[in-house]
Amino acid sequence: MNKTTLTRKLPALLLTVAAGQVGLAGAASAQGGLLGTGLFAPPAPAAPVAPAAATTASTPLAVEQKLEALRYDVGPVDGNIDAMTNHAVMAFQKVNGMPRTGQLSDDVTARILSTNGQPPVLVPNGEPTRVEVSLARQVLFLYENGSLLKILSVSSGTSATPTPTGTFRTFRSEPGWHTSALGRLYNAQYFVGGYAIHGSNSVPAEPASHGCVRIPMNSAEWFPERVPHGTQVVISES
Image (tube, rainbow, N blue to C red; front, side, top):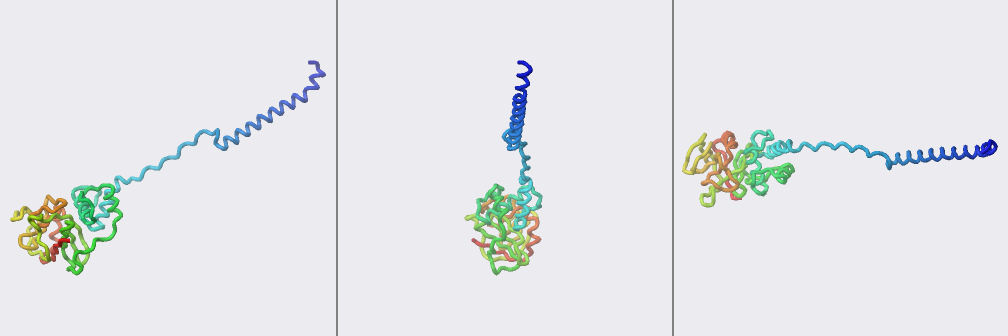
């Protein structure tokens, strides 16, 4: 190629180079647009996962707090699910017509935490301080000065050795352990003849005594102080 021909083609070459630059710039711009849309962008880091709520540790304490507020005797409210809590759970199940396991399954826990209010009284015109025992539900309600103080799980007499029904009054106390014609009794509060409300190491879900009303041992520790001589005791079939 001579000098004249090169001179003539130079403008065309420059235009070609310029066009190429424009094309590259357009491609870069397009790629930038695609990057902006995320088509070519690296995947974004995953959002941090929030830690699960610490319900496992808090639920036992919440259950005990609610049971105590509902007037069940859980003992110390410390989040420790022990025998005292199991008796309180059992009493709750009895009052609410649930299976009497004494165990905190998910459905029992949910039912406890969602329950409000108190069960209806057995004796609407009863004395302000009184004991009501429901043989059908196997629970005891202690009222003090017109208000519900505690609900306890009990075990009353079997069909062969039934607990007498009616309205009575406590008339004698026997502190500590002693043996009577009806068995071994702890902190017994007698309400008629040889029948008493007393602590026992065995308070099953169903009637099992010789006619007395068994209550859990932890409840028997404070029960006599709240039930002085002459306290009305109502034993009901319902």
